[in-house]
Figure 1 (cartoon, helix red, strand yellow):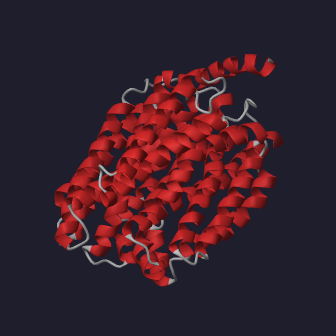
Figure 2 (figure 1 turned 90 degrees about the vertical axis):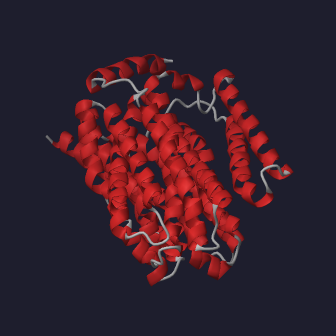
Figure 3 (figure 1 turned 120 degrees about the vertical axis):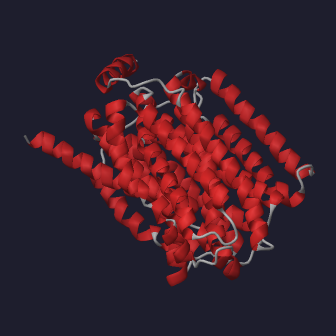
Length: 477
C-alpha cells in the first residue's frame, strides 16, 4: 500500500516541479513584448535592438535544446536540470539589473542557455515519474501550464511593467528558481539516457545555421534584402543547416538522428509544432504592440483583453489530454491547429485602426481553444513516438523546433510588417499587420495539414510493451 502511495507522491512532485520550471522557460519567450516601449524609453535602442530582446532568448534556447537534452542523458537528467535552472535564475537577475540594451540582450541570451538545458529535461523527468496510464492527464496539465505561459506573457509583462517596472518581468523568475532548486534535488529521481558521446559538430552546425538565418531575416528590412550581410547570413545559414541534416544522416552519434523522422508520428508532430509556433509567436509579437500603439490600451489593458486567448489553455488543455487518451492525439492536434489558423485569419479580417473589442473577441476565443487543444496531445505524441532511451533527445528536438518556429515567426512576420507598413501612423501599422497575420494563419493551417500525417491511435499498453522490448537489447550491451 505504501509503495503506490509513494509513487503517486513522487509523480505529483515531479508534475509540480517540471510544470513550474516549464512555465518559467515558456513565459520568457514573449514576456517582454508588452514591455518593449518601457525598455526602449529606459535603455534606448532601435527597433531591431528590441527585436533581439525577444530573439536572443528564443535563438539560444532553440539551438542548444538538443545539446542540453544530450547533456542530461549523459551526466544525469536531474543534475543537469538543476544546473540549467540555476543558470536561468542567475541570468534573470542579470537581465533585471542590465544597465543598457546590449547588456539586456546578452543576459537574455544566457537565459536561453539555461532554458535550453532545463526545458527538455522537464518532459523526460515527468515521463519517468508518471505511470503510462496517467501520462495523458499529466501531459495535459504540463501542456496547460506551458501554453498559459506562452500566451500570458504579454499580460504578465504588461501588468508588471505598468504597476511596478519592466525589470520585474525578470525578477519574477528569481524566487521561483530559488524555491525549485532544493525541491528538484530532494523530490526528483535521477535517470540517465544512452550515454552516447556529445555531438559538438552537430551543435555548431545547428547553432551557426539558425543564427545566420534569423540574423538575415531580422537585418533584411534594415540593410536591404540584397545587401551582402543579409545574403551572407541567409546563404551561410542554409548551408550550415544542410550540413546539420547531412551530419544527422551520416554521423556516428549525431545529436539528432535523422532516422527518427522516418516515424510518421515524430515527423508529423514536429512539422506541425514548427509551423504552429511560427504563426503564433509572430502574431502575438505584433498584436500586443497593435493593442497598445494603435488601439491605445495600456500594457495591463492589452493583456486583460487577450485573456480569452491566454486563459483558454488552463481550461481546455487538461480536457484535451484526456480526449487524446480516448481517441488519439491526431484528431485533437489537427482540430487545435485548424482553430488557431481560423482565429488568426479572423483577426486579419477584422483589424482596423479603431476596431471594437467585441469584433476581436471571437478571434481571441477561437485562437485560445485551438492553442489549448494543441499543447497536451503534442507532448504525448512526441514522447510515445520513440523508445524510452531516446525520449530526452526527442523532447529536445521538439522543443528546439518550436523555438526555431518562434524565432523565425518574429523575424518573418516583422519583416512582412516592415515591408508593407510601419510605425508612422495607425493605418500604416494595420497595413503591415494584416498581411503578416494572413501569413501566420497560413503557416498554422499548413501545420494542421502536417498533423494529418501522424498515424491513428495506438494502444498505450502495446506501445509501452514495444518500447520496453526495443530497450532490452540496448540495456544488455
